[in-house]
Image (cartoon, rainbow, N blue to C red):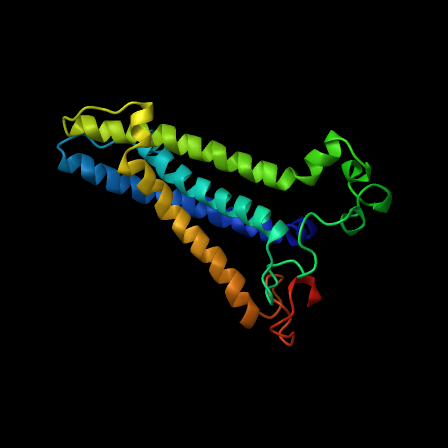
Length: 225
């Protein structure tokens, strides 16, 4: 068990934080939602009913989709774009998908290479070569779809509560509510990525894989360090 915890500490740490903050969001969200219901002279709802409600699902999924969009775009952008001096970038002369030798594909694979990487061509190699972006992109699309569905339900509940007409599926796409939920998260994710890329050129964190070694030149890029 100690070996397992040591070898998977980074993942377990953030999964633990995720669960704690998700529970915290649910508890505080229920309190706020019930406060609004009481202000509207309606009956408060239970915790279980709240965590399965459209408002909670919409709030959670709007954050998930922005996170997966951030990672998907970052994965794809770092194939073709570089940043001199940043450890978040590839080396300046390795723009593009790189050679089979660089990627250890086919005849350049090693004994411990994944089985699908040992093929020289074919659909399995293509899928495995793009599997990270495919999974992140799929999670982004699915979570954005969930946000759209749950957001519309929550929006229409509010409309009916205010004695206004609900909107249809296409109509919700044109509401400020949908795009405000979406863009308020996107802008923060893009700022965070840009800050990390730029700050890591000149700033250091000793011992972190996300930082260059303390004594490395500011101009050192990617694996040059």
